[in-house]
Length: 499
Image (cartoon, rainbow, N blue to C red; front, side, top):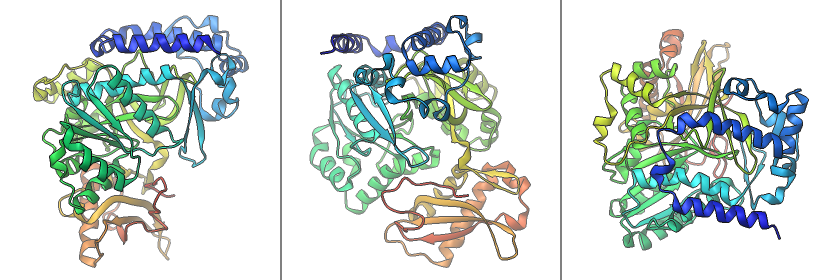
């Protein structure tokens, strides 16, 4: 028997149940983040065999790391130089994999599964991100709530993690009941229709394209989503505000800033940050002011924008890449997950928006407390773009073109973006688009989709508008039926670009 495990569990559970959300998310968290991060570093350097060896190979004495300036000089940790070099046991505290009670798997961008051990207390820490959404956005402390977990179940990281976190909220006193049909659409329809009426709201939690598929297929089957006061929690992909509006309208959403939220999460370290009503309000304004967005983010595409707790996950930016440090089953120090993005302090964000005459606090009318937490924005992996005449073309730009009126009724939202060459070696922009179930392609539809994508590329991507010659700007669109085996195989994680 491991007495230390029992003590860890009791202490973590007692702290979780006894600590109000407001006490966890205080303005002073940012001020205290430096000392907490240094303490985490010294703990990991003292207890994790893999990190001890990693520092030794770099000739680094942990005792010399006494300030944030020292900390910022530590070498980055990556999958290649750390996670793939040492065994799972060596990556865990005290070299004991049995100090973790669950192992999940992720496919990652390579398709080869990676295993991630964690312990009960790690999940409790991440549950605060869910609590922030359920409390601040969904008012789930006062409403009977059915949480329907639509992430894939089994060994994959999302399903069981989400199910557990929602259950922990119920143990804290939230009137939340959880059911986990996974990514089985028929079972989702059944549980929502048979159980949803007993609750004041139903929350669907899953990957954005799958949730949209559930909503669309449900509408075609006669599911009356408006009867269930649907809320949604997303994770795993960047989506546009047009997409949020589209899906929200189909479930009869009444307040887009409060009816859905996205998690910025990774298999490596759980949830790093989450959308809040404030971040959504800001992002929706920026979506309609692309020049302001480009000034703020430095690119002509709209990233995921979330707030984060610097005591839980400490972010840095180095060469445009996000680094984070945080405790987990495998503690990570200055870990580079290859996500591009940046950090914006709370006061700096409000000051920037004020220069453009926008006050998000007034726009929200403060229905729930505004958390004065910093923002992190995430573009995703930099290798998911294509280069065309020197312009970086982002999947997010194409997505908006498919979410315009009329067009959005024809397509699922999935596509494959490529730069190809014709017989004369002239480059052209190829976009293969998946049609919605029951939709048959015709030439007029193809032309309308191409024009819609072109219009949004010209509006949102100044590189495209200025670098690409006029004669080469019109994309060549190919339309395929739902589930095309070459481009949109069912059950496979979709990739929006091909080289």
